[in-house]
Amino acid sequence: MLKKFKTFEEARRDLWVENPDQEYFDRLRKFFSFTEKLIDFRTGYKPGVYKFKTIQEADKDRREKRMAVLLIDKK
Image: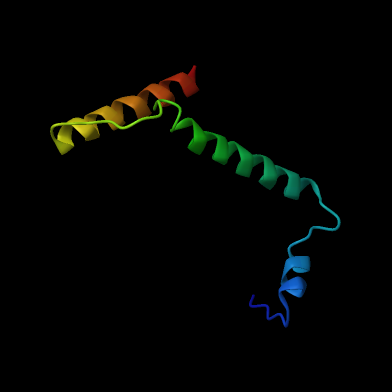
C-alpha cells in the first residue's frame, strides 16, 4: 500500500500506534531481541586499532570473535 502525505508531521503521526494489540508487542519484542544480537557481535572487540599482516589474519580474528559470541549466546 502506498501512502502520500502533504507534510512531515502528517507522515510522523501515521507511524504512531494508538491502540497496540498483542501482535504489536510480539513484533516489538522480536525487534529488540534482534538488535541485542547485533550489539552482541561487537562485544568481542576491545576499543582500539588492530594491526594484521594479511587480510586472512584479520578475517580469522573476526570469525573467531564472532564465533565466541555465538557460543556464549547458546549457553
